[in-house]
Image (cartoon, rainbow, N blue to C red; front, side):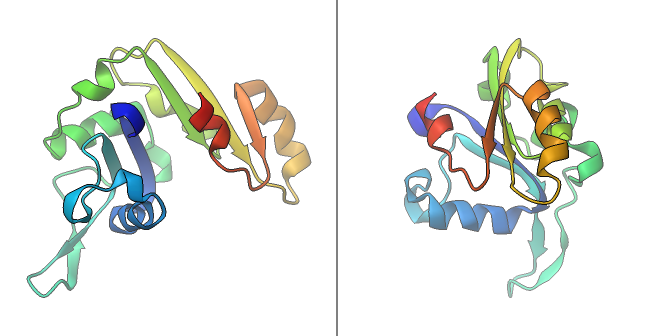
Length: 156
């Protein structure tokens, strides 16, 4: 959300947890009362609490986000279900996709108006590094190896 640039986080885990991680680790992204900047949207699975804050289910007005449906279509469906204004995302012809899986390169498919994208892949150093490196190098514009931080992305 730096300089008002829209940031959409797509998380197949729990959105409530992702939101808290952002609040704690990126205080500049938080507004009054700990709410996230209006430029940050989290597309994820959110708990539905009761009045005592016990989890009683999942928010069901939005699609369940899982590895098999991470795409621009899911992002747009989620935004409609959440009644969010999608124009900050759809009015920009450029996008940056930051991810750690080749399948996530589909995240802009289905978002109207996006014409160009920069892709940044984070590849961890593990036993599969050698076999994944060639594919990452061919598919991503930039590959950050190991426990790289976001300094490269922030420079762009």
